[in-house]
Amino acid sequence: MQVVAVNSVKAENRPGITMKTLFDRSVIEGGRTLLGTVKIPPGARIPVEGTGSHDQDEYGLIIKGSIVTMSGGKEFRVSAGEATFIPRGEEHWALNDGVEDCEIVWVLVER
Image (cartoon, rainbow, N blue to C red; front, side, top):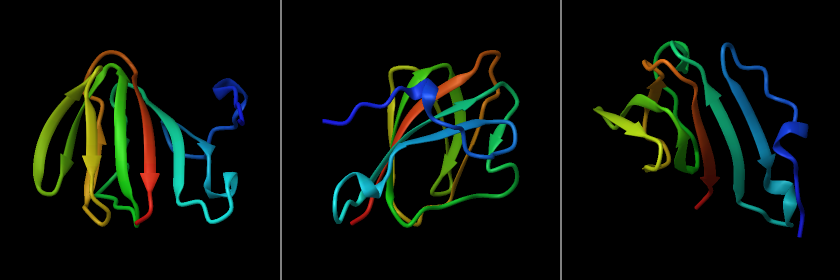
């Protein structure tokens, strides 16, 4: 087993948000999964402009707060206690339009 303290992981350089990759593909030989966290403060948007997509399927679990998100041309509101799935290649964005940080645990899985 490997254990990582979330607070000990250096955040990636992203404007206005705190993104951390906790485990990457190097955890196991031939690894195809990444695990991380993101904290989106009120008013922040990912990406800052436009949409983003991944070469992997994305799973998310909202731990705190809520966001408005667009994925696959549809807008959703997701809140603490809800989980999301975004298929690889699907354009998406997220905006914290609330008054508290939104914290999400995410997993990217290659197929």
